[in-house]
Structure formats: structure tokens, C-alpha cells
Length: 272
Image 1 (cartoon, rainbow, N blue to C red):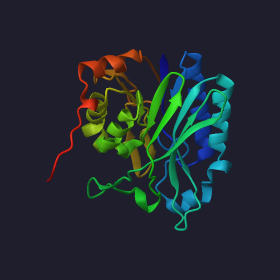
Image 2 (spheres, helix red, strand yellow; image 1 turned 135 degrees about the vertical axis):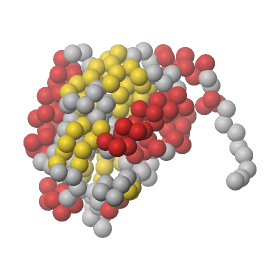
Image 3 (tube, one colour; image 1 turned 45 degrees about the horizontal axis):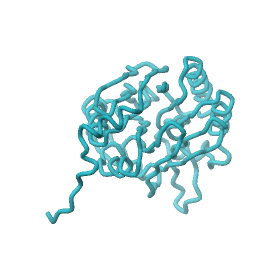
Image 4 (cartoon, one colour; image 1 turned 30 degrees about the vertical axis):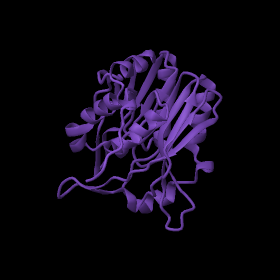
């Protein structure tokens, strides 16, 4: 089948970001993609929590979600909205970082809230505390589509291999990793981690990414990647916004797992 990875440079205004997302989704579908994927925080990239609180809305009111559901139904494609920043009813006012799998009828087939929060200090000038603005999810998700079982993850989840192993052992054939990786950590770790997760699980990895400068305090790595179950890079989106297509054969999942059946070889052990 053919997938289309959408690479974006989303900024602070969801209404301004939406037309670009729609345009690229339509382009991917026109070029034969049956499964189209957008990156993390498709609707907004902003570090200003006060501003986010003024423009974000709950899921049922979100214009980006409504528009992209309409596009999936109109185009007859499966669409992964990598994630949207959404208001919640949490007492502390924190948002959700939520991924959506949309069916060709425009219905929501699955939701996943990012489990692992990006709370890091990369350098003296680059710090992130995602948990200050977003509340973590607590449930792993494998969604059923006619062509595959899809395990949903988001960005920083990538550094927690036990999550990916659980998804694969629960039946996932494809693991999605929509992301907004920083330029420093992206250059150092992005490809290596994605290839490792593919090799460990025998899954295809589809990882659409944010890219470029999103404002004065945020830049991302780009390089949307598709990885085979054997760990090969099948497609690389580079650093410009746009559409990257990849053709793949899901029988490669079974083939890779027969060669290295490590998902069946877990053993209990003591310590440390």
C-alpha cells in the first residue's frame, strides 16, 4: 500500500495552519496515498501557555479536527492526525496532546493521548517542560484498520521501548510516531531510535514530523521517516514542508518476525 507522510511547519495560529495541512493531505491522496499521516501538534506550535489557553478548545469544538475529518471522508482515505493540542476539563487546566485515527467515512476510529511528557534540559538555553502544560495519557492504543493493526504513539514516547514492545505484542503491524523533535536531539537520535524500535518489534514505523522555525523560541528537526520491519529507511522527508510518499508491503512484517522471532522470546528474570 502507499502512505503519505505530511511534514509541516506549524506556528501559533490554528486557523492559519489548517489550509496548509488540508492542501498537503489532498496532494498525498491525489498521488495515491491510502493512509496519510500528519505530525505532532498539527494545529499549533507555541510555548506560550497563556496564549494556548486563549485559542485552544475542547475536542468537540476543534475546527482542525472537524475539517480534517471532513477531508478524510471526502477523499476516502485513512488519516492519522498526528496530534492536536486540545483543552480538557482537568482541574489544573492542562491540555491534551491527542492523536486521532480517522476512517474513510470521516469517523474517529481511535484516540491516543501522549503518555510520556518531554521534560528535559537540552542545554542552558533550551529547556522543555511539557508536563507543565499537558497532562499525560495513561492508556496504550492499538487500532484496527482493514489493512493493518496500528499502534499509536507520539514523539517523546519513542524513548520508551517497552511501550512499543507492548503494542507489537498486542498485534500492531504499523507503529506511528508523529513528532516535533528538537533540532539538537533530532540530529543525534531521531533516525537511530526509529530504526531501533522497528528492529525490536518487526513493525513498520511511520513518523511524520514538524520541521523548521516555528517562532523565536522553537525549531524542529524535520526528516519525516518511514522505516521497514528490518530497520531500513524507506523514505526521508528532508527539512522542507511537504508530502513524502512510501510504498510498502505488509507481508514484510511477518517475514521479519520469522527471521528474528524475538517478540516470542521474553523471559521473566529477577533483579536488579
